Length: 498
View (cartoon, rainbow, N blue to C red):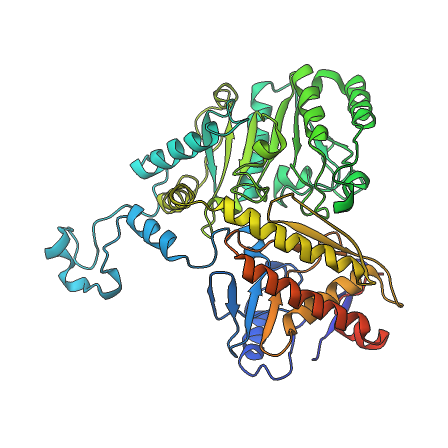
């Protein structure tokens, strides 16, 4: 393997494509990607996997290696890759001809009555500044699902967006529009809400560059939930409430909204006691602060319930949805109290792609697929198999902690310094080792969160058998990696934290 690296912002980063030995088909593709696409298009992952096809919970490389997907394409493909049922529902929602694969465009006009030869009459794929029935159906269906869940009563209207970042920004715009004098935002320290505009401003901490002075950060109980073994421990929210009370005394009614995640995703996969979120909600109610729950990563089953507000027992004023909402089609939404949205005038929450019919069809197909069968019941059984396998990793000397959602489908594996390597080096090395796998079987894991935490988030539809086999393979790979010499292990760590 040959890598070219440079020292950037305290890290050794790869500046050219990975070159995996024997991958005569994948290596040229990686090289071409590095030529025609910027590095910033992707997050760093040491494997740089080339995926030629996908089905269910597996990817295949051009060389035919099968990879069990432990990422769901960063928590998107909750129903698995290319599900037949979802594809059928999606096509039906879009009113595409069932014989589209063999469509003879010259015959289109006579068969479907289109005024232009070469086109068929169907739902448009974009309808900016217009309304389509499928969009309205998707809004109504989503609201019906949300309001049918415990904690969803305050959520009354849908503000669509094309990405999670955009939906977060729209949620914050909505909170600000209620009272322009209450322009300050409380945000969870080290949370992740996106990289664009206000979404970037409420991400991270007060020590990051280019901070927005309207944003004030508060603490998340990371120590109290750093490992699965702490799930049953008592939790005292008083210190966190005291921090918020101090901010209120300092800024008072300039504080207009609070945004937090149900679990700290990009910050290291920390899953708090529900009393922490209850305390945040109580503070917001007491001071008439808009309570925004960013569920972009957590919605549609990740926490063991359809929505995280249901799993954690809270009632947000705004919930932000994305990722699994479209099961692979890019779509997001802020679902809000109607009185908050009424403060925004025409155009203040619009953009080119929001509420387009293609996205609406994807949302409908996703909701209908969940309604048509029990996705969460089997998922919870597989979750227990995965969690048992992940807990076993604590015996690996470079694994510090394992944490995740009870009966959900997202965990974090935190690495620690060991044998002359840092936690971030072990995390990166395990990603590469998992990709290379054993024989023709490997595992697809993304690059580390918070430098040293690997997220495990397979599709919700992973079977108990697939979960057991995947965890057995992960343990075998991690055990072999731990047994390597420090030099061998370091060679697998493409990125080195300084």
